[in-house]
Image (tube, rainbow, N blue to C red; front, side, top):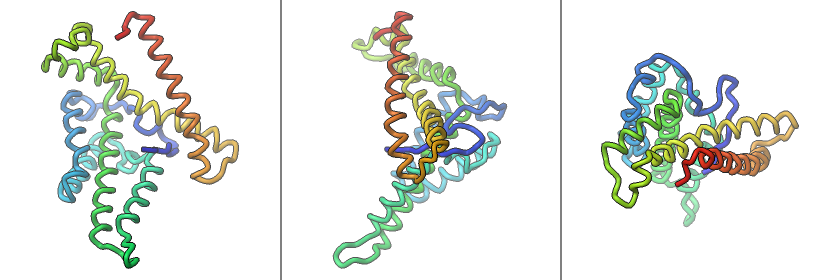
Length: 223
């Protein structure tokens, strides 16, 4: 799904923000668990979405993060959700408004935005090192099958998963940099900027992945 960078003037979307709140010092494994639960809210209906939204709002306030900052980077996501909701709310035969489809689309869209906000909050209070250590702890608690012995023995699975998750905030950083450069060149129109930024960011993400792989290989961490 396409997620456009949204310039906030304060920080890059999904980037870590240092602090001393209880969320910052909470064990990484607990934060991952809550992230998984909150991400499932769109599938559980309006009560679950509303409860998740309140929980994320309270956690953001505790971490001294403005709630609307959690939606930074979601501009294109909002556009896609609005279009999806409009399609669900439209009856074709005869052409009319479907109240049930509209309500369902709005609830689902709200749930997706809550999930996006919870992920944004997670990366705002969790460092990549903390993330890897948490995954490594889970890896030790739940032993992998014998076929994954090499990954388990050398602790590479936690590294691989941490790197995969770490590319999410990296995506927003690259997108914001590219969009800022394009804005400076007077590339008008949201859709026009998206079509210009997407290939650039995709190419740079592939280059970053290749550079990361080369760095790991140089340290003897090939899988």
